[in-house]
Image 1 (tube, helix red, strand yellow):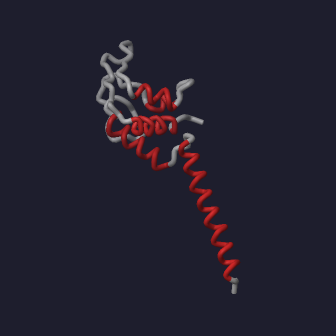
Image 2 (cartoon, rainbow, N blue to C red; image 1 turned 45 degrees about the horizontal axis):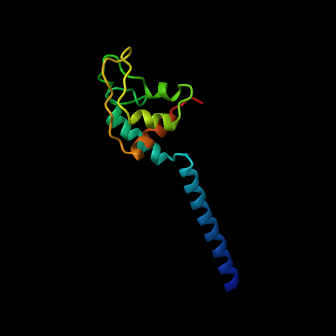
Image 3 (cartoon, one colour; image 1 turned 180 degrees about the horizontal axis):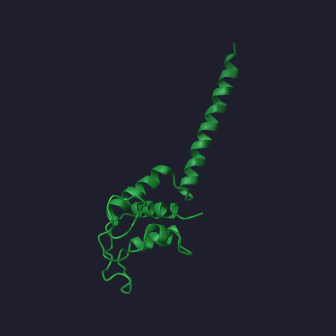
Length: 128
């Protein structure tokens, strides 16, 4: 049977390991490593808001409504130089390419958190 001091030391070591794991996990999240819950949230937002004009997932329920759909999220993810920040800026602005799509993409009024989740979801589609 372990003595009281040994038990306390073991509890202290386990608590230190647990707290370190939480801190490191939070640090990785804040440094840009999305977790599966954030990616699922980004995909959910994209399916709800963006799928009208874009193919946002390989197996989305409905095809885009536009006769000439906007770029697929897979295509966007694989463009040279695309970053989470560039996607977030793009989501937050009204834009269009009149040579490809005859309509204007509205400013979505997405919160910064929503734009970040969608951007990270898009980048998760990048071919490695």
